[in-house]
Image (cartoon, rainbow, N blue to C red; front, side, top):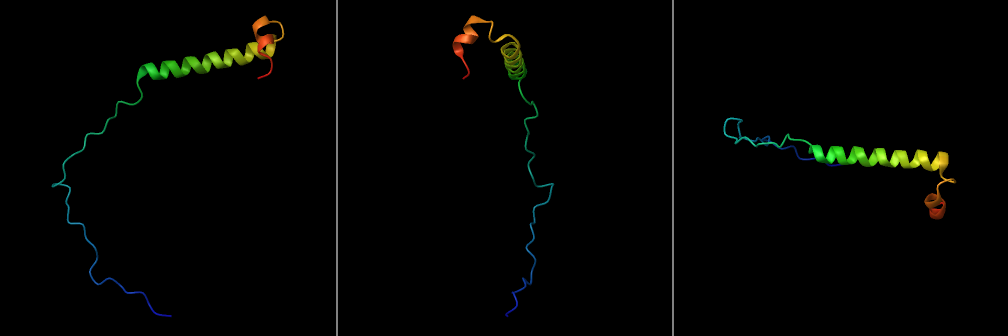
Length: 68
């Protein structure tokens, strides 16, 4: 079986850190309104599940929805 060729000169990247231009990274994160909205929707869904489980048969519009 033939041997693979070995590169005689290693591939070198000649860019030093002094020559690079810094890149500004957006570290702002997620906006506050998005966090509040997602937390509110999760809380509303949890309340919906609990009410549906405990008293779903007694609430008229939930009975009309049926098991969907």
